[in-house]
Length: 283
Image 1 (cartoon, one colour):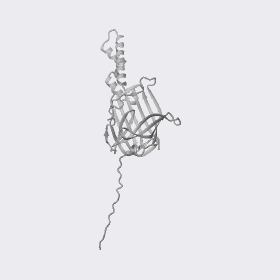
Image 2 (cartoon, one colour):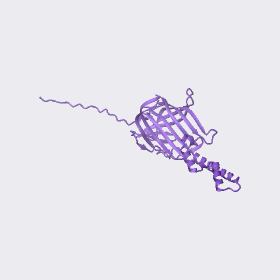
Image 3 (cartoon, rainbow, N blue to C red):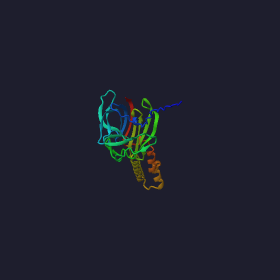
Image 4 (cartoon, rainbow, N blue to C red):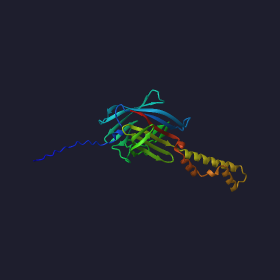
């Protein structure tokens, strides 16, 4: 008797997850955001202006670029309050090209992601344009993208954003650079299968500490001079007394700057903006 054993090959159903759905590009997809903004304007009647508005970003169509790549046309609508009619304020494109997620906005081409995403992966998200480009905010010029470098700081973790709890979120840090006169901070959070769920940016410049401490030093010196001028034959003791009367304990210009530099950025900023964009609705 000959025994025949048949071999059955199982179909390989493994499908690698490249993470493309962190962007979730499809026509008809929309997300609504609540946006809180703080604008610093040193030349305006009000130096700090707060506003709340609503954005709706909707993928409305596809088109091909010159290389035959599919671009997803995305329209951004804006309104000041719920119930107001939506007004189109901007059109930009999103795409996946090779292993990169690309967003082109205001003629600036950003590399938002490298696929598949990896925790702590880092890349130059502004490689396609000069990151020293000048951006105008309330009529003031800033190098908004100075020192930006993208890095995935969290991947696949649950996160509470607004009124939602998402099971799988990618956190992208685009900038976190600080000096005594500049602060550049930008993070974005992408919920898997949904897209951008949160954005926060602090793009701020200041000369406040230098200016305020210089004014103080000048006033201090003028005060001493006026005080000594009232004394017929001033002695060293008189000078010391005048320094004390004029606030001599704050004489150290460097200490003045050090104390000022320690202030929170939302208190010492002179120009730029703070933006917090939070998802409130999606399909």
